Length: 192
Image: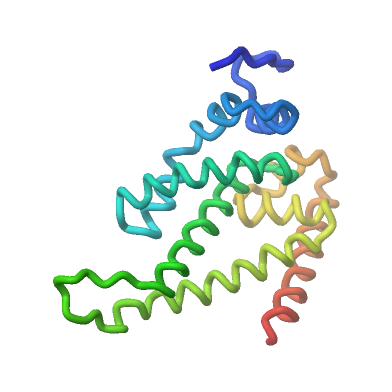
């Protein structure tokens, strides 16, 4: 790996430093170093969706290729969470594509449609998650950060306050208002 100029005191730059360095330089070694930290998690998510080792390994490489482009243009606050969403979306899109064009092995006469019913459930979850992600983007930055840390990353109020630098009372307010605004947005976009 190429030498990474590190402005922090430790020799292992954190995710945010590597994201910033990659966005500035476009250096694939930097991105590779960052991705390597989470590749096993990406593989695990892919395996849980595909239930196939080879397809999951292929997806890990495809997701890295997506990262090369997407990480340069997206503002990423928390790389690990962002990568998880990117991975999940990649898997869901691949499953959706497979569902549209299911492959039937030649040695089997016909495949019952029941084999694909579980994907309808995944489509419903995917739609709900997609609506939630869009609604998260409508929140103010303070609400979005606080809700993300509290609900998605399961941090306590104190940890959210420490991470964001917000006052504890403000954190509670941001979470409460963010949750309410999310609920309103989700209901509005779900047709409830």
